[in-house]
Image 1 (cartoon, helix red, strand yellow):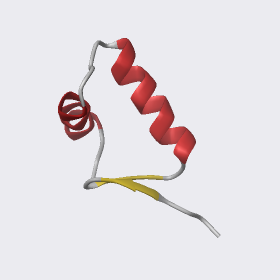
Image 2: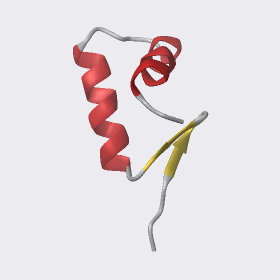
Image 3: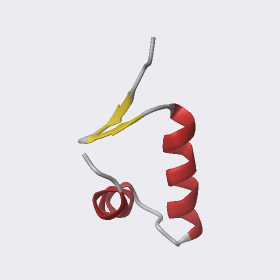
Length: 46
């Protein structure tokens, strides 16, 4: 069974997919949850 992870309005195939995006955002200097949400809005489909 495939489990999806949902954060706000974004859905991810797995925790690993979410973690990879989170690490990328951190590397690019995003530090707050608000900045991370903007990063997700720009880089992920809903």
